[in-house]
Image (cartoon, rainbow, N blue to C red; front, top):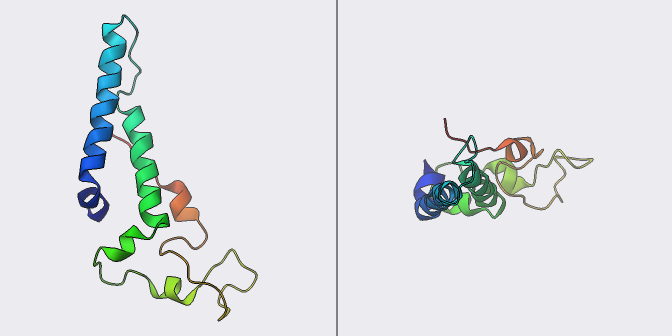
Length: 107
């Protein structure tokens, strides 16, 4: 919800552009793709990943965010994930598994 409310104008624009592209293709005699929202899905996925990577989510007033692990620099991609000297990292990006699997789609 937080992402959607924060980025609603951008999400709306991506959806409008995606549908407009499909309509333009049809009006020029082309065949529309099976998924008229494919372009928007790609754009929204990128927006979600940036929302986390750029730590925008951490400034939305959600309780517990930034996470304590992020503040402590816990990073399981490093040899010593809990070392005191590890730099602070964005919340929700520890192993990058969550971030890399983020996908927006419409049914």
